[in-house]
Amino acid sequence: MKTTEIRRNRLSLYETALCLAIAKARQDEFRWERFIDNLSQICDTLAYEVASKDSAPSKRSSS
Image 1 (cartoon, rainbow, N blue to C red):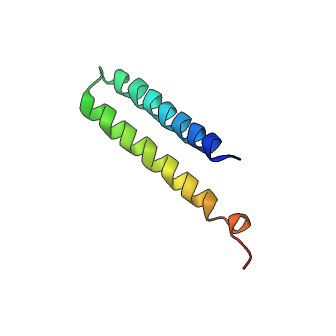
Image 2 (cartoon, rainbow, N blue to C red):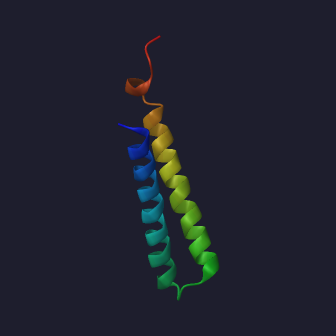
């Protein structure tokens, strides 16, 4: 996978996080503090999942 493809995928994940945070905030009559909390929680979860996959034994080099 090329670096530009990785950047596109990460941007896509961020855009998805924005959409999810907006949708969830709209359920609460779109309060900005709920949007920010939702976005933070979604990004934290995505970062944790990406980090977990990157640290999987199959991803580590066998040096």
